Image 1 (cartoon, helix red, strand yellow):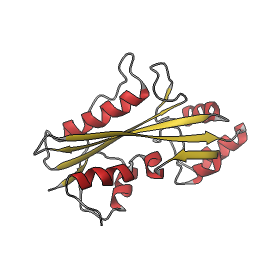
Image 2 (cartoon, helix red, strand yellow):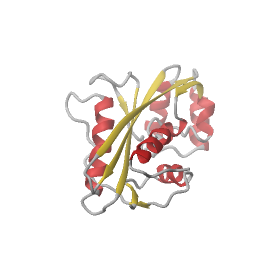
Image 3 (cartoon, rainbow, N blue to C red):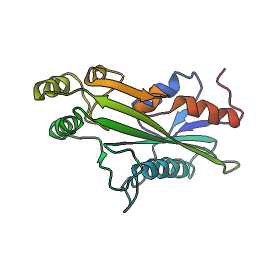
Length: 196
């Protein structure tokens, strides 16, 4: 059965390539807006499912979809502020300034859809990152050294972003990059796709 990664993210593609399995990619075109009263947890879960279902309209097989939400809260409250991809140097600076000395919760939704059986497995992985107290100069220095305009939270943990943190807490570091691999391997095994 074909494996399809429902993402155009080079970060997710690179993570999946580490598992040494054959897969194709397809970009889902969905509305990623947050619904009224929706918690970050429910947003990450819903968007990962919607991405899988959207790609299933044109592809068959096992579809892997993921979506990540970063928040200053614990992720269960509809009032929790969400950090989107900054898109500009100014927004990235403001996000990192807001994160200084605080803990950011990353919620990564994961969906695995079997288009033959229509069975969908879902999961939301939590990963917490606590930032050091950062000076404006440290933030500017970081932003001048690493391109993070397309990264939720305005950093790359797999790169120089690690220098911004005082602590990391979670069971799967790949979830911070955008794809909870430990959970994905468990889901694939339930579909008789074994990595080892």
